[in-house]
Image 1: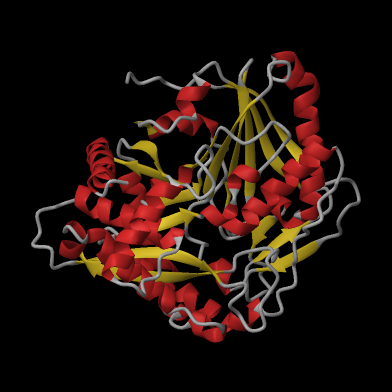
Image 2: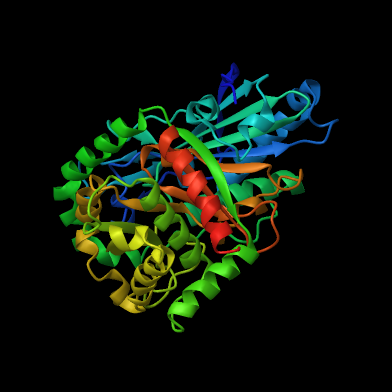
Length: 451
């Protein structure tokens, strides 16, 4: 397929403020769960929506849709007010804060593009750079103070729009970010604030891990160096594509794993990650003897695992790291999926309620930094986020893409948009050679397994 360079015309760069007199000056202190992300780049997502014909015209976009998007965004920011604030480190404080003041605002870029909407929102391989013009710019968190959120709306005349979000992970995790986007969409669709699931800002339980927070500052430089290494790799020419696993294929993987171990952990998440991890290791065959260990990292929402548990709508970060490992040779072999499932299953079963889930938390950061150079595979997103339920009134998004996996080497996961309930979308950004190898192995593996 010929490369299609994306062209974007910036129409306006504006700011959307909190509703007048809606908040007083307030600060939200960062916890251990937030501080872990200080040295990492922002999370970037794109939501592609195909619009009804009359709604997709330039005239309707400018006179009706855009003003309503701005109004509903302002109302959503009222509920999620820290997203309009700035990350700070007050001189008289011992911790970072997100400081919000009355009339604070968020950067919103308005753009127009004549590029091919369906090329950009497809599953097929294409240059990762094709999507970059649709991503809003968010300044880094160094120096401070720094904004934590930026948005961009790109109109494709007579076709649809793309809503891009760049959010510093230090402010919110994936569950919280999705909560914000769904709330904005709900307000837009209803024409008023009709959100019943409100964010919770009480940090009584999460600030209990302050001792770990202080220790992490000593490790930031190593994380920064690891991040810069990832960034150098990401600057290579990457291609991205989305791969689908249907519910029937996941059921087939389940039977394969259970045939080897009747007590195996066979959730959709474990099975999907196992198949993708084993396939990635095969696609990256570097000729070693297979004795080296491969590592896999995924996030665990600890909201329900802390004692006492905290609300699912808790605002901020509340995730921990879970590591799995297996020999590369085992993952490359005929039983690669089974070996991967066994490793990830052991990691999942190792999680315990209460402070057990925090065991080893003081070393999470350093362990990630040390493993990055070894080709650590990690996960961004989750089918549990239900990103395709972000409903502005136009129906399901044509596509949701996690752009930031290009800078982390992660795979992205989401529930399938088009397949029957239970399917999973897997997003990858790899070199062209690796992506081609992965695609071939991915399809061949399913054929061999008759899935």
